[in-house]
Image (tube, rainbow, N blue to C red; front, side, top):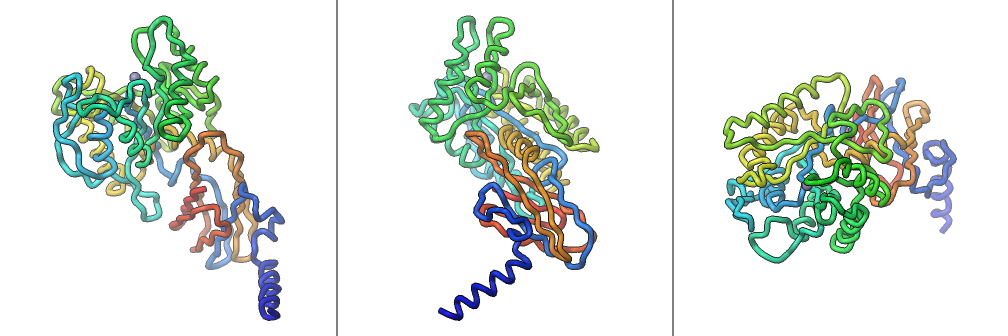
Length: 398
Ligand SMILES: [Zn+2]
């Protein structure tokens, strides 16, 4: 008993010297406050800043497939995440939503700390079109959507019925989709994508208003910021309306001219001296060019594989291939999180103050950049955070 007490007192005394809560006199149980310590090999000036993009990448590339077609699960998901790609798979419209039947090891970038992360994209769905019922269905099933979500894809709201015509109840379309996905999947969609089609002029603004009214954080529409968004300074994300670049295969083009044009654009973005966020979308990714609005699987495979070879883990490793919601949430947090440091000799305590998060927030991460002349080790002080580090980069998952 006595020795336990002595040990306890000794721990408090040691704590007075090194424990960060004494340095900052903050409430150690506060989930909004995270501490990490840097132990320097030798005393030197240190600065800690937030990385513009997760893992300190040059380009955040958010790719979205609209309309919830089944080819996303049959071809795009195994190609990017690793697995068996479906062979030819005719759907209810006699369009081939399958791929080449090959096995993919997955396409990856790294987190800058020796871990590979698979390419992930977003799927924008209309819950009114989702069915579990028959084998040749053209749309995803709930189980397939769940697999995409669990694989790190974001699921975006594209309206309950993809309704656009005169007389559409925009509020219902937005809200009913949120409600149904919440019932089926257990999460709340927070990002809206305006469906396209026959419509009254300006209908997209009705959708934008309805989406924001029912709690969506941003809306992909016909006009807005982007498709290239600078991220080197704070980004105005409140009720954001943004535009995306549309990519589709043309004819039976085996030279992949469409993909090559986008690859050229990506190359130019990689050469900029400031980090940017680029948004692009298509529809299906099967062998057939569904509705003439899709990427045929051979071209999609060529495109994604080329991106991985150039900018993924095996290449320059400067891309963050992540769905819209994930990038949105990183930047939201980046622009609101507070970082401060206290240095005592060779120890630097980093205090990270996390704001209250909006409802439906899914991805909670921040990457930090440490500038100092010598080596250091990172010692997490809070158990409400997962830390990975490598040289000057520290990745935190909150
Ligand atoms: Zn659509």
